[in-house]
Image (tube, rainbow, N blue to C red):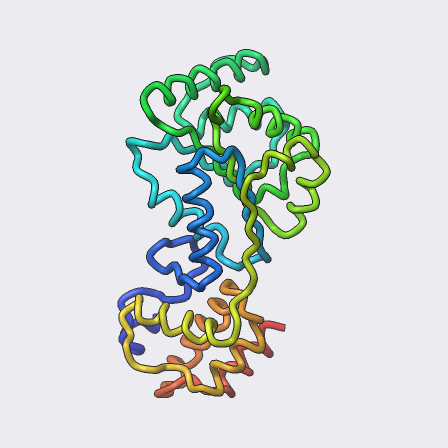
Amino acid sequence: MYLEYWGLQKFPFENVPDPEFMYYSAEHEEALARLVYAVKRNKGAVLLTGEIGCGKTTLSRVFIQQLADSEYDIGLMTNPSLEPIDFLNEALYQIGLNPQSHTKSELLKMLNDRMIENMKNNRTTLLIIDEAQLIYKETFEEIRLLSNFQLNDRYLLTLVLIGQPELRDIIRGYKQLDQRIAIRYHLNPLNKDNTEKYVVFRLEKAGRTKTIFTAAAMEEIYNYSGGVPRKINNVCDLALLIGFSMKVEKIDIDIIKKVVKDSL
């Protein structure tokens, strides 16, 4: 559509968790450092929260890329809205097992055997649960039980719980699980300066080196988005499309205001 017109090789503002387009604000760098530290030090459980669209899922994909396959057995659950038995089955499936049983005790034994095998082979078993605020209340009890898998000197499983801000309050309702959370971090929206850098970064990653958005347009993007990357992507993508249809040289504040108005 507008790629050739703007001198782009890729669409710069897609709302997909592509690690290549990960913008590292100071908060994102710290969040990633905490995740990596928690896993490498076998801390047991980690909690990462943030507002909708702040880059949690993309960060989790970058996090996975930083872990060597030979050292980590990684399961990623992106749809945890499951009944307890289905949740355990999905967790086992995501770490590469094919459970044939539907009894809780056999599923837990299968998981325990896998974790012991991984430990003997110097591999860490890691289960990442995205959108964890959607987990059913009764299923959280299973997660608490998973956090009990440990030897005298180490955890056999590292849990990474990722979700929206309300996940913090949900976790507090399960005291034993809450006490197992060794590291917590909350991602906030980008500030004005980082919003502008984010837009420039995404354009450069897509192949554009010259400025497209005017300073006033950038300020309006921040005012509309509040620094939330997903909203930044939406407004910038539509602005580039409209700018292409109007055959303008730059995206000014009027185009951004038009996009915002059409989005309301």
